Amino acid sequence: MTILVTGAAGFVGAAVAAALLDRGEAVLGLDSLNDYYDVGLKRARLARLEGRPGFRFLRLDLARHDEVLALARSEPALDRIVHLAAQAGVRHSLVDPWSYLSSNVTGHLAILELARRLPRLRHLVYASSSSVYGGNSKLPAAEDDAVDEPLSLYAASKRADELMSRTYARLFGTPMTGLRFFTVYGPWGRPDMTPFLFTRAVLEGTTITLYDGGRLQRDFTAIEDIVPGVLAALERPAAADAAGVAHRLYNLGNDRPTWMRDFLAIIERACGKAADIREAPVSAAEPKATWADLTLARRDLGFDPKVPLEEGLPRFVAWFRGYYGL
Ligand SMILES: NC(=O)c1ccc[n+]([C@@H]2O[C@H](COP(=O)([O-])OP(=O)(O)OC[C@H]3O[C@@H](n4cnc5c(N)ncnc54)[C@H](O)[C@@H]3O)[C@@H](O)[C@H]2O)c1
Image (cartoon, rainbow, N blue to C red; front, side, top):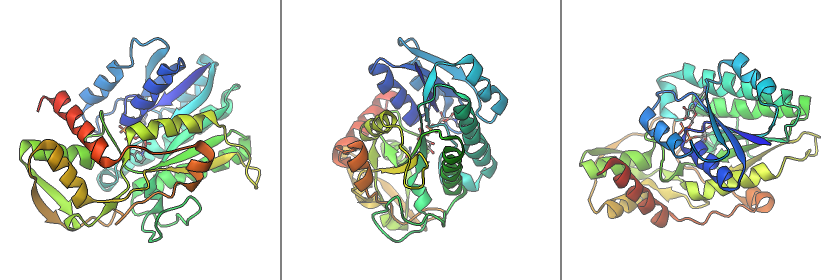
């Protein structure tokens, strides 16, 4: 039996694929290797997977839905899917909205259509995002809170994924679990995210833009905690809920919201250098705070985040220095 991991050259996808291979699973990794950020980093993540027993890679854009559906015939052994490919990033959705529709809506639909055609499929796990909570003021955010006020097209596309998935689970009975990740960071992370941007700026001595004077809060979650959460979800195919629909949603976060100013201070300590800070007003697309209520994930998945920022951020900085030779 084989697990399809989409976004396998991405930050989370490469880490999940590696953990599945560690368990002796067969993994078909899929990724378009698009150039939203440094393709060299994506290839370097992939290079760590290629050649490992059980791993195969397919370069494909999910928006090419006919080619995605052809996998139902060419890969009949697929019995689980971890769908992590997406156009990520909140701010970029103000710059290139079309890529969000193509990857996150058309691409997600391609995976749903593939899933219903796979005769052996047991479970589809897919990435949603804490950004679906939008401008909600209730904290911590829980899965049954209202999610009707997305602040960005990225958030709207992730909410659309949740709704499309629930519809397909209802219509076709495919068990599905959506995971709302809260700002994931760690080694091999994403260059458009603050851990990366801040670390590079501190080490290179360039100016950091701190939105709202650092008075934003984020529930940063270490990749070392996210990966076991994804695997725990994958192991437990969603059972039908009270409405008879085998679809569930879980927050995967850290339950420890941190002020951005404090976050930057940890990076400064890990780099041994002070940051050059410029303050700027925050974009209307960014929530003021994120904070995951983990009650459901703890109860159903045994999810238990262990890595505090004081431990995870220095580990990230050490990786960054080694990888970029800084
Ligand atoms: N990292 C986070 O903090 C975070 C937070 C919330 C949600 N998420 C979600 O988790 C998932 C993984 O995020 P990540 O941080 O690893 O992002 P990433 O950008 O590193 O990985 C996504 C991968 O998907 C690939 N991809 C994009 N569009 C594609 C398409 N149309 N067809 C095939 N491949 C495509 C990209 O090339 C990339 O390698 C995404 O769905 C993202 O929206 C991430």
